[in-house]
Image 1 (spheres, rainbow, N blue to C red):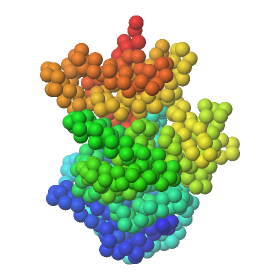
Image 2 (image 1 turned 120 degrees about the vertical axis):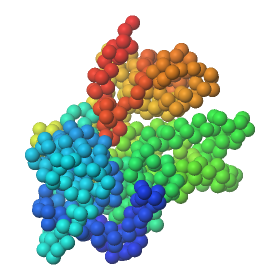
Image 3 (image 1 turned 180 degrees about the vertical axis):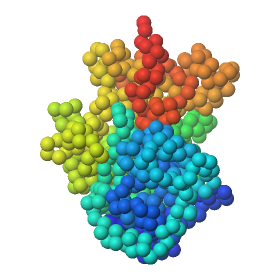
Image 4 (image 1 turned 135 degrees about the vertical axis):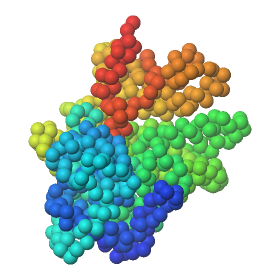
Length: 603
């Protein structure tokens, strides 16, 4: 695997792979997937880098990137690195206020935007932010505001620097690039307060690439990875860079809502994702099995149990399964499991890293049992993604994996068992936040993750976000994320927010899966007018009560949800209940639904 500086990486890969596909993207007009070869990728990066230089973008200047996943996002990143500039990504779903905050905080004067929505928001920000001088637009169909006199389309922009002077400038900068250069700012999602810019250097990324090369020799240039999570997310950004370093073809999913379709079109061998995606797969498969005739249900159940014995009891523990089990597993693997994976579009799957939130043990074991190669892990923006992850064999269910090579992890037993991390992948600090930086590190240089956990040898276990821990009025500590992860497995529950801080008992706000509820209502001949009416019906309330009770049967009594309220509308990023990485903003939820929560706790 290559650990070449990102200023030169793609050009070196183009010399090696030339006409092979580096990127794939879906042509929205034709619906067909088109490729960008390594050579073409390199040429586009160089053309863009020259335009940046000619446009006056200086070394270590910040430039903004506000777009959904598109090939241009990666072109901008590597063109910026060639200029020793600092790309600062923003989520495509960010509001004008969020964009304005980052533009001001990161001192951005040039902002690259994706589609009409991002342009509209960015133009509002530009009128309010004197420092934002220009917008450069990826999508040629975007209609400019009549007042806009400064914006240009990306296709026009890249030809502005096609001259010898700009080329010389870029080449000089590429040669001057060092691992000490700042690579990017990743803005935290702000679950507990103001978003902060995580300063990552090229040395952080190159170290991440090196240690992943040690742990993941399975990643080769024969693979294709689906780029699904936003490239703003450190998980997807670092994973995609890792793929490019290994010569992997990266297929870029532009619209998150189309992922089920694009998976069946591309058939990737790899894809990083968050637990919610796999929870939906788990719930969908179980719902499908529940609808089978008795005989088929028995076969499906036997197949899953066979897979569990083969993969979890034997293979994961380094043991050779007995002949009868190997034969039985082989039959199921080529029939039932192969059919399931083909329906999902992942029948060629080699590795599917999953992180970003707690993953239920039941979901993990089930997917391993049906031979979907999940690798559950843990990391943060501040640690350039991965701190630990589960190897394909020899992992401990319930853990967040084995600590990465040359990364130090320590548990601060005096401070809520906080997970502390030190190593070359750990960031240098938050941008312009000296007070936050002073609190973020121990005296001997360990980063305070804000997460509680425990360490058994090199295996790390996650307990809870320390700031999320609730203490009931009875003095019991509650870990809401663990309860939410448990309940989210239920096919009738789309979202759940556990309540309980300084309350007499644990409560919850639940957004049902209305697709499943409507099917249930139809089967039971229940009539209703809309979602709001549906969740008030006694039959639906009884159903949800039974689902909640079943889901928490293994919890301690003080952890169990005693009361809950069903909500007719989901938590959203637009409503500010979710961060851009789909984590709950608990403070916002508690404030927004204060009257409902208070009513829930009344005698």
